[in-house]
Amino acid sequence: MKGVINNATTDPNKILPMTYHWARQYYKDGVANNWVPEEVPMQQDIELWKRQGSGALSEDERRMIFYNLGFFSTAESLTANNIVLAIYRHLTNPECRQYLLRQAYEEAVHTDTFIYCCDSLGLNPDEVYNMYHTIKSIKQKDDFVVDMTKSVLDPTFSTQGTKNIQRFVHDLVGYYVIMEGIFFYAGFAMMLSLLRQNKMVGIGEQFQFILRDETVHLAFGSDLINTIVKENPEIWTEDFQKIITQNIKQGVELEDQYARDCLPRGILGLRPDTISQYLQYIADRRLERIGLQKLYGASTPFPWMSEIIDLKKEKNFFETRVTEYQTSGNLDWE
Ligand code: FE
Ligand code: MN
Image 1 (tube, rainbow, N blue to C red):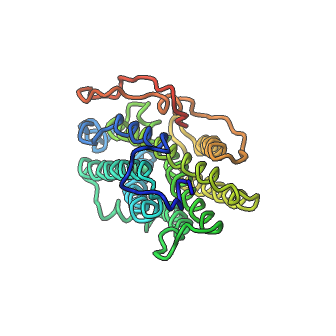
Image 2: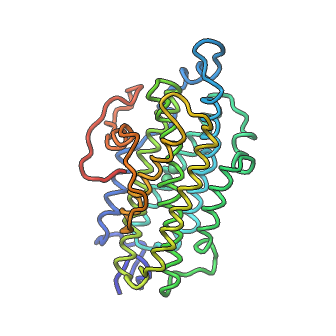
Image 3: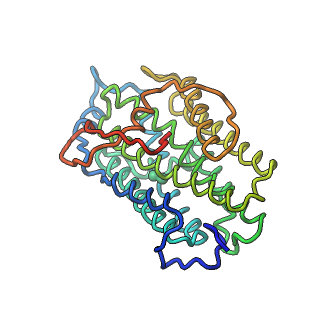
């Protein structure tokens, strides 16, 4: 029996010879992207965050930044916990596990980023780290993911049998496609739009690094889903495809509500309707990436987001700004 899951002959300690070279490649891509938040100076951010009067951030800009810090500060830990506690147990293939360990480390770096941001800006941690309870639009996203991914967290769950493989893939879509592929993207667009205006440049650069990591997480998750479907084609029924598509659609709606809550009136260069359009555009990409029909047919209102995603920073930690790039040709980042 062969396969990425339910393979009785898999020895999780024996990584060579290797079957899934894409998993190995994502591991290497992750290592090549190595970074830590302390490389990014926060002096300008601290100054701008505290500034009053002329040149200060508007109330709407502050709200947008604060909400995104609130969402991401706990979402990164939620993702790390899901990988380590739920997916890792069932994915015994050694090259996939090597990638999951790398991803788990990157989530730890992301968690560290928000500690660093809170410390630098002097934010109240009790407030920021409680926003996933107190802010409805954040809570709804997190509850949706927790709810959609509980099969795999059940200690009695196994991936044996068609129904259970479907449950596993269903939850993988929740973790990878919806959480990392949709729920992070309104935030990326908002924070990187500010960066383009030279506002909160430290946090903006950190979001750029996180975005780069997340695109690899999403690519790994999509290839994992596609591999399981290819090896177990009986799970990919029309009904099952409908359920997955419906979940992604609901994810887009929740992300849209979140974006409107972060940014009720819009700021320079960024309006709630434009973010909606962007979410529809990326949702179509996510659907197609896992072999489903697209839903929206929207074009991207933010071509500069693709430019950021398509570029790879050269490894030069002496640069204080992310200005040195090399093109990566081999991955469909968005
Ligand atoms: Fe992350
Ligand atoms: Mn991630």
